[in-house]
Length: 398
Image 1: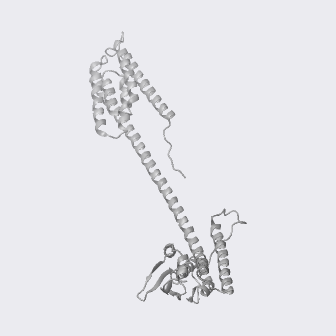
Image 2 (image 1 turned 120 degrees about the horizontal axis):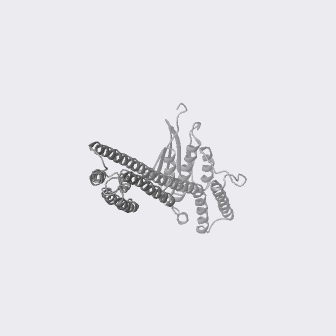
Image 3 (image 1 turned 120 degrees about the vertical axis):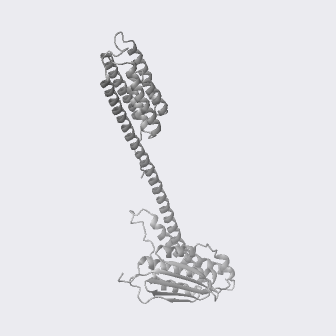
């Protein structure tokens, strides 16, 4: 989604200039007609100054086209022209409004006082016949009111432009944040898929690598042992491909139910089967689970299974054949997992075939954090490698 405010098109800009110039010219001609009708000095027959006034007014109208680029200079010049030309007075009003939109009050004050002075000079140079003190006062009051209207209008227009500019800035910031959130969501989804694929495949592939390494390292295997090892390799390779297909199934079109397999969703209830599968080849496993798993959410149970699976995979890589204990216990509103296995010298053939990605424990830690828990790992004083995790298990009363 893209946020946007309507901008000013070229046609709209041209129309704005046309109607402003037309309004200034119309008002200027109306004021010139009033002066001619009133037979002010120089405006009565033969109307010599009226033509000069009109010419100066045309120059002022042309100068208005540059008021946006040079607001103060144009306003000051046109205001000075209004001391000699009544047509320029309307152009000076437009220039003053345009200057005020910039909300710089010192130039506005200078041009405003210049406009009052220009109006007084015009009254002195071109007085109307039979004009008295009352007419002068009326002209000053009308000039002040007109100038106040121009300044108020320009200030309102400037405030509106500033508001629109702020809204545009806020919308751009909101759009940038939206793009950032989308990028973060995509990165998180890629990390989730990579973590799931690692957890699913690392266990199977490491088992295949260990048995295939043993085949190349051991030349004294009997036919039964060779057949058993090749069967394990075949079964685990097939299981790895099946689980990979299931993981990638979540990336397919969800509307194609006929071709989309269900994603793998193992839980702690499946952990005994996993342990029984690896005990025959990897070494003894001591597993202790709580008698009652009611109340444990599927999300926490699934992530606990994956963490335990990663522990078994790491045992196969770094301490093959050594015993490992996996103990789950409930501590108040937490599920506490403790995995411990003594470190030993890896079998050369196996160690050569099982590269360490360095991502297993990182992914396990991320899994624990994502469900609101924590995970620590490292060697203890006895030289064993220990993984401890605390995952939330709220009470039924909560």
